[in-house]
Length: 250
Ligand SMILES: NC(=O)c1ccc[n+]([C@@H]2O[C@H](COP(=O)([O-])OP(=O)(O)OC[C@H]3O[C@@H](n4cnc5c(N)ncnc54)[C@H](O)[C@@H]3O)[C@@H](O)[C@H]2O)c1
Image (tube, rainbow, N blue to C red):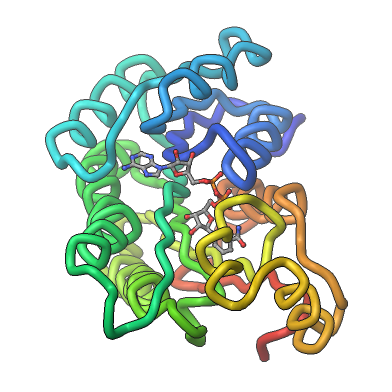
């Protein structure tokens, strides 16, 4: 028996890097997955290898009505919802004295507000089913800040706070809420932060100095945590912010 056999999962932001690795691992363990992302072309390609186990839904998570419509369409296709993974993210870095308000708002809209919408619309389905697992994406940046990242770090800290609150509200309904906090994972997503710090060489030096394992992580090293938190193996695990960072934070 596979670890996620029969599970019906919504995965928002699941077409590249950490999200793509998560979707691949979840499907390998027997789940069917409704994958959503704003990048329609890559999204449609990304689900092709999975046949009937995955379907792509174009979605801009900043629009509440569109999140509601995605959750409804995905639940209809899957016949219910057992798991919700929210991995869409948006990073901008820059000096505080020139950081634009519209960038601050977009960082919060994608990283925080959208995850609230996803939970808001998925939870009624989970309540009807009498169980569910929600996995939201924060970052090690939500635990401690970094230069040029006041917007991103504070948004990711908000995701942790939101998860703790939701976990206590939803525990009586047997719905678990956990949050992922990866450290430096080697994907193009970090480019704005890398440029602010001083380029690839500066980041590699920093990683060697601050990460006990001495290297960045890979998307494939985050994916198994998604599988664990969606599975019944983690049935007593909720309200956690799980750090996946090679040991740099303790
Ligand atoms: N790479 C890292 O070091 C790292 C570390 C900690 C946390 N994270 C988080 O992991 C998640 C995935 O990061 P990644 O490195 O795989 O990058 P990625 O760029 O591959 O993933 C981000 C995804 O979010 C989607 N997205 C952005 N705006 C959207 C919108 N408005 N509506 C719908 N989808 C939207 C993008 O199209 C993309 O598919 C992000 O939430 C990021 O904050 C990454």
